[in-house]
Every structure is written in structure tokens, then in C-alpha cells.
Amino acid sequence: MAGDNTETRDHWWWRPGWRPGRSFYTWHFLVDDQPELHEFVTRIRSDLDKVAVLDLIPPRWLHMTTQGVGFADEVSEEDLEAIGAAATERVAGLGPIEARLGPVLADAEGVHLPVQPVEAVAVVRQAVREAIGEVWGKGRVPEAAEGFHPHVSLAYANTSGASLAPIRELLDRHADVVPLTLRRVALIDLNRDEGYRWRAVLTSSLGHPRF
Image 1: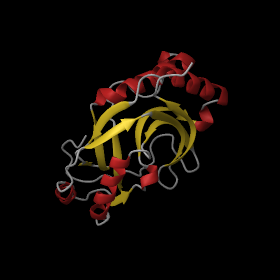
Image 2: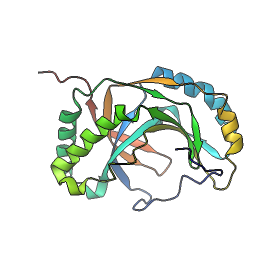
Image 3: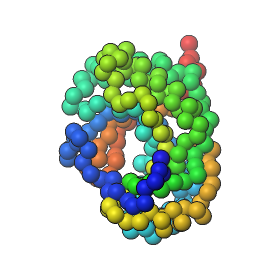
Image 4: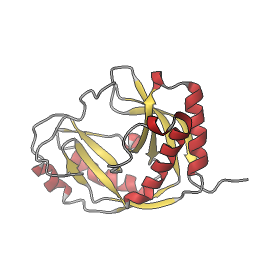
């Protein structure tokens, strides 16, 4: 995802449909239960904190964006419950998922840890997409199936036009690859008025279902 970008681009522009006070239902992997990741974040934050053009993500709000559903004022409670139930059934038995994060990269809109192998988490995203399609029909599943680049962001760019070169030089000191074990995926109600904040609606286990 780092690509050929040489300058930052402000991450906080208002994307289509967003406005103050509006929230969005989406599925995320939440990573509060990943000790190796949080140890790495603690080490790298002292360096990232020196970069004025970056807004560091508080540890409790670290996440891996997975699959959107829709704006909260456009999704009925009945549909949300049906999607949640269908997804919970489909993801059961898909995990735990073992993956890796890193090495850390800087792209135009921030600093992130890419996930490898992509396929390890893509199977969960596909299961969630199938659940949405079961409720709304395949033609109404949001977002493209292709082009999924799972990652955990550590900081977002808060200005445009700053050189990425010194940020990348700084990141060269932190070439760790961090192990990741995913046991659950969460449906959240996401707001971005003061950075990304959310309320968990449902947490679905990736472990084997119990009968």
C-alpha cells in the first residue's frame, strides 16, 4: 500500500456521505487482545510522536478495517440483526487465524502495518460479504470484493504536502514482524467526529461453534 507516494495527504477529509454526527456500521477486527502488537506500538510511539504531521491512534482504537455495511441512518435494526446473525454463523469455525503484521510502512495518509498473508483474513471478509448478500441480495453488498489490503493503522496524516522521506527513514528502525492471532470479528457503529471511535454492536467468534 505504500506505493510511489512521496508526500502526505490529509486523511481527515470528509468522504462521501460522511458529516458530523453521522455514524457507519462496519465490521472490524479489533486488536485490543494482541499483546505483541501493543508491545510494538509502545516502542514505536516515541518516534512517531515526534512527527507533527501524524496523528497517533490511541492504543484502544487500533483496528483492522474489514467490511462496511452502511450508514446507521440507512440500515434498519431488523436488517442489522439479520446480517449479524448470518455473519456469526458463517464465521464460526474459520479461526483462530494466525497471521503477521509488518514491516511497518508509510503511505500518503498514514503509517500502517500490513497483514500477511492477506488470504488469512480475506476468508472472514468473504463470509461477512456473503452474510450481507444473504439479507440484502448479492447486488447490494457494499464495497468491491477485490482490492482488499488488510492492515492496522498506527497513525494518520493530518496535513497534505509533507515529505514522506523522513518518516520512512524513521520507520526503518522498526522493521519488526509482529505475530497476530485473530479469534473474533466485531460489528461496530463507527463515528469519526473526533477521530475514529465506535460502539461494539456484536462480536462474533471465529472459533468452532458449540452445540
